[in-house]
Length: 296
Length: 205
Image 1 (cartoon, rainbow over the protein chains, first blue to last red):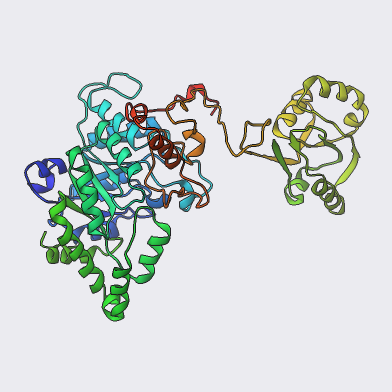
Image 2: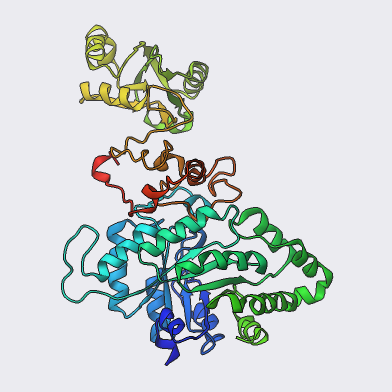
């Protein structure tokens, strides 16, 4: 059954992988998040659960992933290094494995100052590379300090992130290669709005031989596009798309422009990579339509 | 260089019970003492009813032998005080309090971190004294201090136009390292190989 496979297994089988993402609540009730997930049941191979995204405190991804799994979804457990030291990270990894959660997205994490607990202590005991290495060691039956694990070793499908439109790109590629050497098996990218840049990127990473799932963030408003251009690293919304959003105010307001742009981007880029990762930012109800229009 | 700032009257008033002996630590060439603010604060405290009964001046409070000597010289003032309000960097206060375990001591200052080798050399460069210098790998740029997250394995995804996601005016430390590496052909081997992890036993975190 497609929904129970590791993402890399799907790629190996030649399938175009589609994933999406949900965020846990700042609270104890998962109804809203589960409602969002229902919109895409059966349409995606897996659903990422964000980890205190943008350094805003939320319910833990481990709990949310477990509930998603119980409801028949395949979760991708996102783990950042911002809030937990190497003990806590390994602890959560073992917990995830115990729950049968196999897909991981290993991130360094946004800095504390970007979020809503600006006084908190930033941890960053490990980073995405050393975390990937740590996961690999656990899979080999050892913790990071070299102690043998009791019993069976966990087995994961290890993912990480890269920003294909970062400028300059070389430092990102350098880090990507380190991640792969440390054991990363797939990449979900930061949102891409420029297929030409993505094509160049894919040419450069072809030799690495790991699947890349291109990131798509639906453009809701002109304001959102401009905000991302100003403030979000690795994202660039070209003027042409901003103009398109401006052209028909009603169409943009209804979400139709955003849907069309996303579908077109996926269409243009699907032949260049091994999958797409949707980041709906609350517009989960529109994901299925986008995928349909894009023919994936 | 050490920077101290005097605390606010609101924060200090509740602690200043009885007769207060004020002791500023002046005269350390490494420490900036905010004299104007100190004088202004004393006026505010007095106006709000604090009994600033006496004042003596120390310098190099962090020098235990100097401080011990001064405690002998000022024994009377100290015995007469219910509270001793000390304006000094954190090292001075700990030294002073260590010699007077039976006395109520209140810190009048906050000590702030300033880059440059702590207490000695003001500089835009910083040393966290991690105990495992890896600048041989990173071309003389310290990844622990030049990177806001102290990352050891390369740039995070937060750099925008070569600037750090924490401070738009701060260059991405790993971008700087990368630029130096690129200028030296064939020098990326050290950084490409291996996974770097901190040994916090070597530092004083």
